[in-house]
Image 1 (spheres, rainbow, N blue to C red):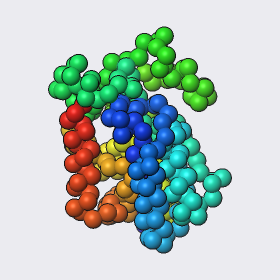
Image 2 (tube, rainbow, N blue to C red):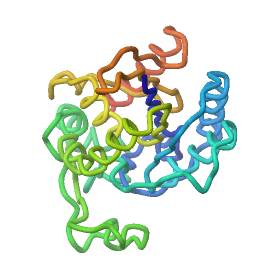
Image 3 (cartoon, rainbow, N blue to C red):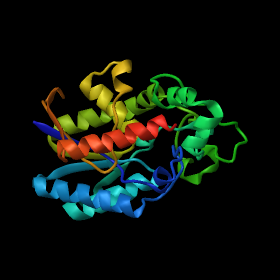
Amino acid sequence: MIKLILLRHGESQWNLENRFTGWKDVSLTNKGIEEATFSGEKLYKMNIKIGSVYTSILNRAIETTDIVTDIINFPKENIQCDWRLNERHYGALEGLNKSETAKKYGEDQVHIWRRSYDISPPSLEINDQRHPKLNSKFKNIEGELPVGESLKDVIDRLQPFWGKYVNHITKMGGNHLIVAHSNSLRAIIKILDKLSAEQITSVNIPTGVPLVYTLSQKLDTVEKKYLINETELKEKQALVLNQGKSQ
C-alpha cells in the first residue's frame, strides 16, 4: 500500500483579506502558521516515515512545507519544488477583493469563474504589472506562462508532473506528501477519485488539514480520510464554501 498525503497550505494573508491570490506570493498569517504546525503534529503522531515531499514554488506552500518538515524531521534538502503544483492563475481577478468583485460583476458570474470546471476568468493583458513574466521567480518556466486558468487548465498543466510523480511513488512505495493549493489539489483529487467535471466543482479543501489517501499499487483508493474529526471538517468546509459564495 502507498499513502499519499495532500495538504493545502495554511491560511495566507490574502486568504484573510478575502482576495484572489493565484500566483501572487504572499506569506502565512499567524493562523496559517498554527494550521501548518497542527498538520505537522498530526503527521508526526501517525508515526509513518515520509519518503518524499513535493510542493509548489509559491511562498505560502513553501512556508507550510518548512514548518511541517521541521516537525516530522524530513530533510530540507530533499524537498522538491515544482511550479506545476502552483495555484490556479486567476488572471485579471488576481489581487481583487472577492466581495467587491462580486458586487462589480455579479455573484453568479464570479461564482462561475471560480467554481466552474472549464471557464476561465478574464485574462491579464500583456502589459499588466501583475503578468507572471515580470516575476523573476517564474523566469525558468518553459512554455507560455498562464494569464488566467480554469480548473481544466490546471489539470492540463499538472499532467507532465503527475505522470512522473506516479511513476516515482509506485516504484518507491511508502508514504508521500504533497503540499500545494486549493485548485492544484482539487486537480489531483479529480484524478485519484475519478470524478466528473460536475462532481469536482463541489469539492472544498480546507487550509491546513492533511488528507490521507491509502492507495493500492495501481493507485486505486483503498481509504481516504482527513486527519480531523467530522464536525470540525464540516465547519472548515462550510467556511470554504461560504467564501466561494462571496465571490
